[in-house]
Image (cartoon, rainbow, N blue to C red):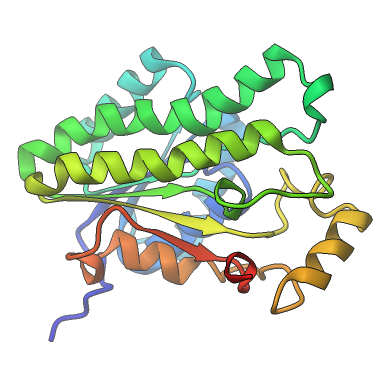
Length: 257
């Protein structure tokens, strides 16, 4: 059998790749053979990420593109740049995200909109404009970053807008998968639990929240760097050719209890 996880010759877009798990995903896809376009609002950070990956994998093509996934006009331009640079788009990783931890009675409408627009609307807009190119070739792999908090709730940290957005991502994944399966496009999601990132460090890694998490999680710890890579690679590669509309929770067992 050929290596089902080999991404040689594939091209990928990663939205939300300026820090955290997005950087890990970019490095992993490059290691597996893919050429990559990395998107985020913070262009200076994207340039640094691109330079680091090129240093490790000089044979890979990697381009940084400034893009706010809340803005459809910016997405249209970014997707066109990727098509012009690579000629095709095989893989889309929708990883851009923000979080707020505010009780609902104190949650401002602007803050609610910021989270929903980034975490859910961004997935919709990126998928809308990439999937058109995938349809032309009758091939595509879309991987969305959801969360265990799209399925469960947190008693210690009030992440209401984030929960709502990630629950939407899970069901949007199902709907888009059902529509585009006949076009050779699979759409799946990962549901991480607690991983230390720039976004979670000051909220879900706060002492009280972390203590509660460790006490309840069957594995008794947060996720370690790299422990999401296997799930992402499965969905991004031909190993998942008959899998679509699924959310794989990488959560140390949190959602089974």
